Image (tube, rainbow, N blue to C red; front, side, top):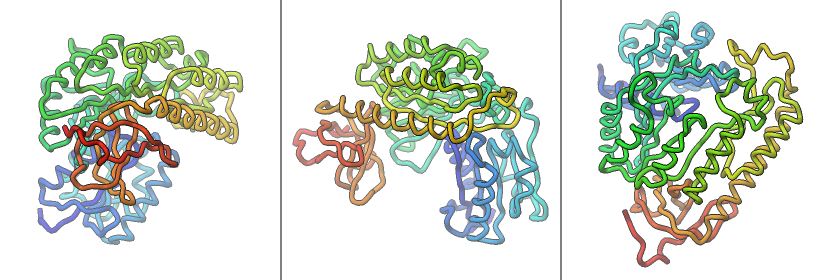
Length: 439
């Protein structure tokens, strides 16, 4: 390849997508491309799409137009979950040259060598044929990396298209996964975030499992922290919680999808647990790690969700010792079983319920932050300089900021949490700590 060629990337959706975009970028760099910002002129633009994002088609069109404004002669490739689900729809977008599904996206550089800029080429196999696990980890952030340890899902929840976009659950063995973690650690990052579609399902069909994986990862030298991105409540076992509570590297931060506090709605969603089990998981975490941060996903406006069902969810979350919520408004997705449910919640009502839970989330986060006041934690400072401040997260996911100093980037410092600013972030004056510990 000509070393003067440039490639730019735009990623929609989850941390898993970001890790995969980085892997594709490294493939381009091996082929002699130079990575550049998406806002600049590039020879190739790669758009990694998401099927969970609302108005995926409109967003994809807008991003393609943005790329072509930067360089009207650029080669535009669209990959990812939406590309697997709706390849023909994407191929009709003016300016798109190639559409690659779940199996083909990691071969993008080879396709670009042969694809002509005439009509968009579609390369997407049936999702049931997607069986390979392609390892990925994100690059570009000096402080942390997202390491993909699992892909796909066997659950087929009523609202979700992920199994159709990514295929069945699959992962590498522990030995290879640990080697990928070591490779990521060698880049100098201090924190590795484990990500996937359903990471608690790691090792499904083998004699390995997620608990065995994290026990091996805990032994890796050169990484100070491991963070579990999101894990289903039915797969978050007491043994996993107990291990994290005594681990030196796995931090006390759990993100556990709930989706609804109504058992009727959970059953309708085809979730694999009831609210009682979820409450037990939260209680177990707080029993062993009182300062642990616990996040929850929740969906409002699912078909059949009455006002009584919603209030059951609201009250359940209000009484639960969770630290923040990610609130999603239900939206219809093709080829999902939720479409068969006739009792539709009006869109305005969905928005009202979202607003109520968003306000509750803000209150819970503020309460959690207040509980951490006057306690000492370790902050991993990130590289951004935001209006003269540098910020980072404690092990239990409290954001802290201090006056920017270049030497703080990618440093772990012990800080006592004292003052919350107007933005709801702990502000610290590092110079007041004479015996501060730099790890």
